[in-house]
Image 1 (cartoon, rainbow, N blue to C red):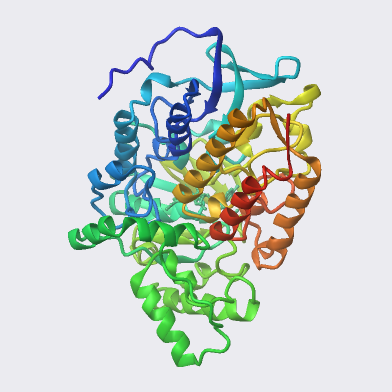
Image 2 (cartoon, rainbow, N blue to C red; image 1 turned 45 degrees about the horizontal axis):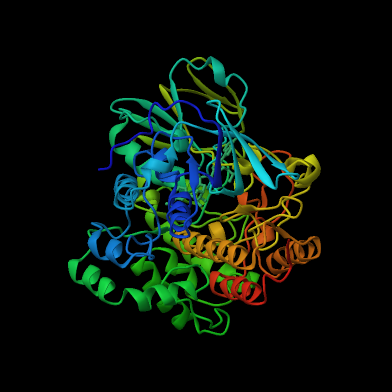
Amino acid sequence: AEASIDSVTASETGASFDAVVIGAGFSGMYMLHRLRGLGLTARVYEAGDGVGGTWYWNRYPGARCDVESVEYCYSFSEELRQEWDWTERYPSQPEILRYAEHVADRFELRRDLRFRTRVTRAAYDEAASRWRVETDRGDRVTARFLITAVGCLSDARVPGIPGAGSFRGESFHTGRWPHEEVDFTGKRVAVIGTGSSGIQIIPVIAERAAQVTVFQRTPNFTIPAWNRPLQPEYARWVKENYAEIRSTMRDSLFGIAASFNTGSALEASEQERLAELEARWAHGGPGFLGAFGDTAVDPRANELVAEFVRDKIRRTVADPRVAELLSPRDHPIGTKRPCFDTDYYATFNRPNVRLVDVRATPIEEITQTGLRTAGAAYEVDTIVYATGYDALTGALLAIDVTGAGGASLRAKWAAGPRTYLGLMTAGFPNLFTITGPGSPSVLSNMFVSIEQHVDWIAGCLRHLAETGAAVIEAGPGAEDAWTRHVGDVAAQTLFPLADSWYLGANVPGKPRVFLPYPGGVGAYRVICDEVAAKGYEGFVLS
Ligand code: N01
């Protein structure tokens, strides 16, 4: 491994770069690699003490990606893809983190990375056409380009439950998990939240803890992942056919290789429908939702798929009352981020696991020794917050960003983010947002969306160099049209029917705006490529 100069470096004052990148997850690392390829200088600031972003922070037991490992990785380097071997169908957090570290070493990225350094402020200096960037360690640097690679789900949210500060036991948020192992042996553990993180951590804690009490506000649909060791023949086949598989993924809806049918669930006979759903259930993973083409748009078609899952819950969970509590009925399947699990529903058959419906009996306070709901008091040793994130905009707006004329990004986005293609926002010249709001981002395999954005930005920077333009900015008209388009596409789906983090519904006071672009990564890529081919149509270059 390359010698690391990251840990204790003095703060930099007055240094200037072609680009400052915020974040050293998979976006920031690849962006740095591409910037170097363009002959540009760059500094990458990272709040964590290492690379990996999401996978640096999410160290909770059971953390695992639910995109298949052979698809959840970079495609830009033939050597990298040939030399790296995944061990499981779905990669665990430690394995993904090792991959991130391998990439950082392999491409000698570390010399331009600064860890434990959070960007606090970025201001565009119009006279100089440069960004002035400040960090919490006292760095004051400037750059022509500011590129955010801050992640979509990185601003962890702990709800403000009264009394939380008085709790005498330990408490953890899944997305800020300690580096040391947390020992649950013999402990009484409360888990608040039943999204992807809760659904992954609950079965693992239940194996060790004396008792697990799950505080559920909204039940979620979850499909078995059927994780298993990666079969060597399959891994070899993927490597041999990598280019073709990647091209399928890039042209797809969600950036994964699984096939998504276009046929109607309503037109299929009951027998055909059940056969298709059973086959996809047995295969497991995100492909389950690709059984029919109308699940995302037609409530009756959706209900057929939703009821199939509820039936599985009833067949798995012994206590019919618990099975019903676990059965989602308030939102169509797929309108909240679907979950993929290992033994989630079966975990509720364990004698040491109980489910508390906090929709019926809300959590009223946290006491020194546990939680009190409207119905009862629960004594616990440990509280796990699996309560999610201020998604897509939280991490961006945590930075005090001001653009031309000192206008603040927070003010501009007060009623919801406004972007052109999720890549730039008008009034903030030379600021690029990798997987920003208004791009497919979280509705896709992040690697596919990250590589597409970074490649597009790199192409754009090359274009600026070739044409001698100093500044690029989203045109207000193009931004208005794109922002409207994102909302229009979402309105054609069932997504708006769920109180999801896609809509900001999980953060009190956040405007209800559909944040990611739901048109599919394939269609989105075509749009971005056409914009570039037409001389960056809709952008203003000067
Ligand atoms: O967060 P979430 P997450 N009282 O927001 C509940 C990705 N991810 O960390 O639905 C009681 O989904 C909240 O209830 P409700 C993935 O994209 C991927 O689990 O708001 N409950 C909900 O149940 C995922 O979607 C992977 O009613 C409260 C839960 O907390 C995203 O990250 C793994 C509450 C939050 O669920 C976020 O997932 C993990 C309160 N005050 C995450 N506040 C994989 O790839 C919140 N809740 C496998």
